Each structure stands twice: as C-alpha cells, then as structure tokens.
Length: 404
Image 1: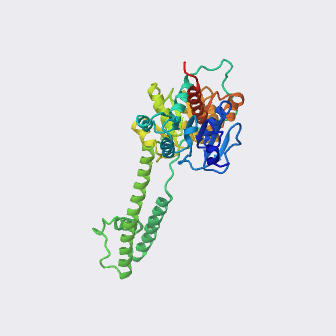
Image 2 (image 1 turned 90 degrees about the vertical axis):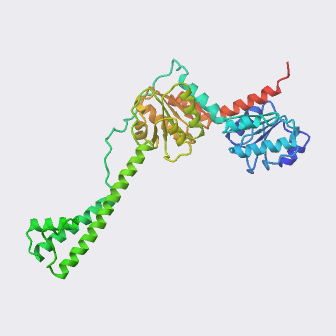
Image 3 (image 1 turned 180 degrees about the vertical axis):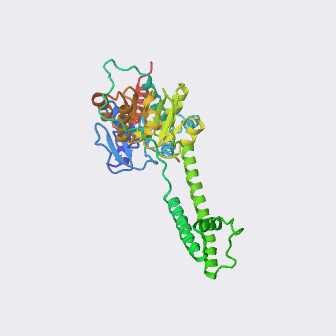
C-alpha cells in the first residue's frame, strides 16, 4: 500500500514512524495496541511481519499530509536523515509533535531551541546509563556463578618472532662472507684467520691498513669491489628492517598491545558510540576502566586515549585479549559490539576466566536477551533498541494522557 494513500485516506494513522530500524519496529510493536501505527521506510518489505501496525514504502523526506498524525517519529540509523525528516515534517505542519533519535545529543539540544514541539533522545546515552546501572544492581539470591566447564588457555609467554626478511638478509651477508673467505684464502694465499679478518674489515669498509688488494689480480679487485658494495647495501637493508620492526612494536605498545595490570576495574569491549558513552558514564561514577577494541585506528579510540583510559587492541572473542585486559581480576565486563553472537561469545569467555565477574551484554534480539538469564546465567543483557523504543513509547503515551 502506498504512503500517499495511507496518509490521505480517512483513517490516517495516529503514529507515523519513519525508519524500519530495530528501534522503529520495537516502537511500533509497543504502540500498536493503543494507537494506529504506520511505519515508513524505503525498503519494499518490512524487516518483520507487521503485528497490529501497518507498513508503507515511501520517501523519507517529503511526507504528505503529515499534519493529521498525532506524533511523528524519525528513528533511522542516520542522524542527518532524521534531521531532514524533522525539518520536512515541520515544513508541512507547525503543530505536529516530532520526536527523533540522535547520536549527537549536543546537536539535538541546539535544534530543540529552534523547533517548536520537537524532542529527541540519544539511544547510546540511554543504553549507557542502563548498562552501567546493571553493574550495581543486586544479584538475585538464586544467582550462582556459572560452572567452569572448560580449561582456560594457558598463559604462555609471548615469543619474539624475527622478521623473515631480516633472516634472509643475514643469510645473504653470511653466505657472501663465507664464499669470500674461501676465495681470498686460496687466491691471495692468506691463512684462514687472515682471510676471515680481511673479509670482515673489507665488508665493514674499515680495512686496507694492513692487508690490501693493491697488487692483487684484476679478478680479486673486482670481487673486492663487489663485496664492499654488496656488504654496504645489505647492511643498510638489515638496519632498515630492524628499525622497522622496533618501530612497529613501539607503535603497538602505544596503541594498546600490552598487558594491563589492574584489578577491580571494568572492561568495556567495543568502542563505538555506545561504548564511548558507557566509558564516560563509568568515569563519572568513579570506576576504573579498560577499553578493548579490534581496531587500532577506530573512530572513537583517540577520545579514549585522551581520557587516559588504557586500551587493549585485540579480539575479545579470544581469551588472550581478555587476559591482556586483566579479565581474571576485573570487577565487570561490558560488551557492546554491534553483533549479538560476538557479545555472547565474549561474555562466555569472561565467565570462563572469572566466574564471579558481572557480565553485561548488548543484545539486539530481545528473545535472546531474556533467554541468556534462564539458560546461561548471564543476568544482564540489554537491547539498545528496546531501551530506546520504551522511552519513545512512553513519550507518545504521555502525550496522549488527558490534561489534569
């Protein structure tokens, strides 16, 4: 059914939601029992089968006859698009209430000063507060530590791995030295020790004070020239490779490939918009934090470094990264990556290394979030979309309450 038909028909929906995102669909489910709800998106089909609400494919920036709706929500995954929808709605109607989601809450506060009947929420901020609150929530009396059913990975020392290019360069220079020693031993009638001494001094370009090739044959002189040139070139290559290896190790240490020695801290895995909000909320509450992320060049990692937060670069699905971040002595683990199964695996790894740790996971699937408590003893699993949808639904319901 077309969007134009639905918004121009006699039964105009009371709630119009632009964006069939996780938040949009959850919001539609929550409001469908009380209001007539329409979800609008560009996709020809909704991500879930509508249950008590309708879906229409349409342009997200030019809503027709939108003034007849009770409340308009813009909950796409793009801040810029949500703002464009809000402005388009306000162009069509000066009175229709507009509620949008914005990651950049400071921008939302500025917009609210210029637009009437406009409000916004920041899902990362809402989720961060709820997630951090879970750290302090009392454990149910029936909650027991999950039994350790596997052996943790042994804490093996890290091995120094020499660059293969360095090995090849050293092999080449050793081969040149050996062949040259043999040649000059026979061609110049030098003893073995004198031949070795002569080759080393020539390769290091510090010789010819006692033994020289001045009266030697042309072949010997050419071999000596080639040996000196090859030695200088190969030595420069070796120094360059060694310097590069040391520099890479130094940068790795700078960007977090090191073991954090702390206890009683909170691990935050996944430094995105939600992860950064969680870290800031934890700092406000006086917690010590260690961040873990897979990317050394992550968008939000410079802000983490600026706050003085230790950051470990590694994949927390593997126990090595969790050990480096001090998981065995941690107070809690908060995993807020964008993938449910990744967060679940990280949470299970954390419980394996520290059965007493408080585990808080960001889970999009609400059914999975509820099941984790019952079957895997992970007591705190939150869906950012469900949290945001609940707040948005409350706004719509409060607006529908009669005055007085």
